[in-house]
Amino acid sequence: MDMEEQEEQSPLFKKWGTWYRLVIGFLVLLILFFYFLTKHFS
Amino acid sequence: MSRPDWIVLVLTLLGIIAYGLYKSRTSRDLDGYFLANRSVPWYMVLLGIMGTQASAVTFLSAPGQAYTDGMRFVQYYFGLPLAMVVLCITFVPAFHRLKIYTAYEFLEQRFDLKTRTLTSFLFLLQRGLSTGISISAPSIILSSLLGWDIIWTNIFMGGLLIIYAVTGGARAIAYTQQLQLIIIFAGMFVAGYMVIHRLPEGVGLSEALHIGGKAGKLNIITTGISENGFDWNDRYNLFSGIIGGFFLALSYFGTDQSQVGRYLTARSVSESRLGLLMNGFVKVPMQFFILLLGVLVFTFYQFNPEPVFFNQAQLDLLSRSKYKDSLVLLERSYAETEALRIKHVTASSSLQVQQITAAKDGYRSTVKRWLKDKEVGGDDNDTNYIFLRFVFDYLPKGLIGLLIAVIFLAAWGSISATLNSLSSCTIVDFHKRFSKPLSQEKEFRLSRIYTFFWGVFCVAVAQLAYNLGNSLIEAVNVLGSLFYGVILGIFLVAFYRKRVGATAVFISAIITEAFVILLNVLGRKGIVSLSFLWFNLVGAVGVVLLSELIQKFMKKAPVAAASPE
Image (cartoon, rainbow over all chains, first blue to last red; front, side, top):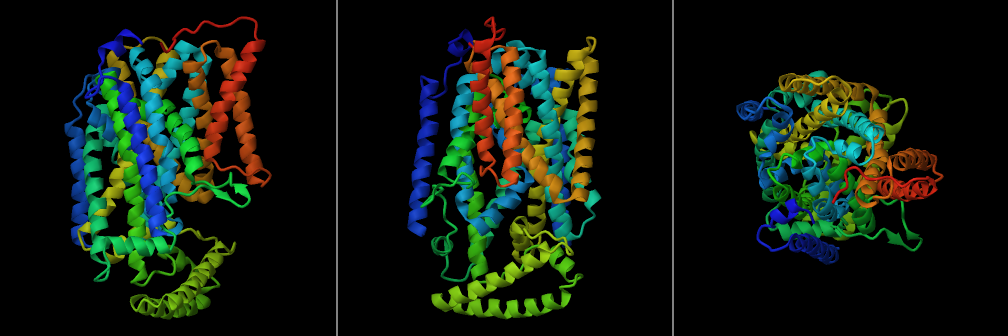
């Protein structure tokens, strides 16, 4: 990790990794929700 | 169009141009013109990224796509959030640290001049042509629906934005994209409300979704797997969306200057990252809602007469052909069938509705077959006309003007950012790189001239595309998927394979590009069955593996000049 990255803290969370996990988690939730919609309305 | 529609349309477009000019104040150097002095907050980066990706065709095509093929197209975007994460970890910090203007500058620092020049040239070629098409496609639709002259429509679609794109550069583009997206979302929201509002009494959103679902339009998740195994030629399914879509999004957002130029305007690495990550949150839901609009329009037409073909200009073409008498008879029978179908839909007699719908589909197929006749030479695909035809036939005065403005603004947001990026590559990667040092003022003036030049070039390509018809449009659409994977492969080697040097990556890029083109040729001849989304994966992985292999046979391991860490 370089100096610039150390200086630039992630907003809201301590680490950027939390943001990345949130984005991926949200995608998984969306796919599950879409799967539910597909089954429910088919 | 009525007078209120014209007033809304003209005022909206003039308002955007005036706002763009008002926000044109910038420092007279490359930093100000191409990067807005690296001062943009994350939410404007987000809107810039979204406004650049969403072209006019996005808002015209997607509802029609859902209407005909269902909502499975949304899976095309599943790889995008994953790509945003990879970009934030690797690409964004490297680009910011090196203080570059174009993504391809990074390649010279990491590899050599020829690699930078090759990728920048591929970008200019592919993006210059495809931007012409993105002007042409909505212009053809509007001129066909409204009877406007195609030359003037192309000039308005691709030319008026040049005023603020040339004058204010990245800053004016960022501010206008912000306003454009607000108007676009408001317009689409009102259109969605109006569709639901016009459904019969007792049919709300839930009932509309059930009707769409029964007709197979809510096929949001599909696997592409059947009794015969996985269909590699199936464009939109969960796997092609996540894997193919990931590589496509990574190459588009990581190596296409029209996108890189947006997040380089951010005031810090954090602001760039936040803009990209928020795009990862909102892009899939946004596409979902645009597609949902198509399903709602489909439900609307279950209770209202559906045109036998949505593109009236093509029906007019048939009425001047050898099929003119047959068309009159067909339209008469079709109208009777539609009246009968709506009567049974309202009475909920599902068996009769199925039989009548099958007959109705038969009429549509006949019209398409006539249009495909070489003597007629028509276009048998009316998907892009479905949404606008609904707008013209059923929405109130004023709102039609607003939705036409939405089409223009979506085009302008995307094209203006692209002109800025084409200009930045031309001056930074070519003019400045291969000529004597220039003063800041001269660089600034040249940047404006190149922006203007690319604007005129793209409008000219749009006109050429209209004259040559579908063949050029298809060719340019394929062109992007042919090059994106290879360009991404070069960047992936730059970031992740430090042992690999310039010559190895250059040779592997040329060989892989030839292989991808061969795959496309074999696909067209029916020898290979592979959807275009997979070309991105083949290109990227091919360059990475081949460059490793070639490097092993070379005598000396290179030293990376600009390592990403």
